[in-house]
Length: 177
Image 1: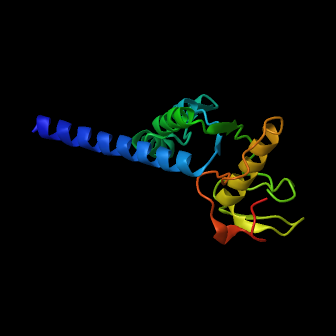
Image 2: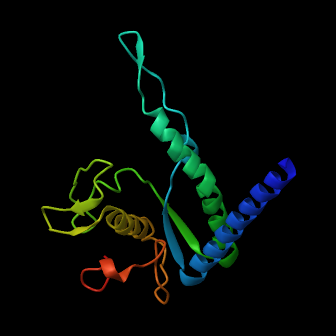
């Protein structure tokens, strides 16, 4: 019984690793430059610190965070970033890591600060009236930050510059800013 479970876990791990390599190769083949958030995944998976109020321990959100931690570990996000870096280096594709601080709190069009809670999934800017999915807005902003941080180096012009995948349904004027 234990041997069968072990084989099943090994099979799942191999399938995940195979998917990571296939996806990394697909991204590297389609892009000359990749922009990703420089996430500190080890820190994101840490336990919440205990909260004490008047000498009594109170809820600190660890129960809900443990599910996210398991998901991050199960998906192998850190492994994918490492594999992507290896494949990109092999094929000469540049990876630009962008500081993730505030990428979901600013408008990608006018750079105005638009504060939102984690549960708000839609971005709307009162200044420029940009309205789009919060994750898409962050992706465009990460792309802008990456391009801005690499202005001293010549960026390729023949092939697409992509974050993960270019999604034309979100574009307003036919081009990503």
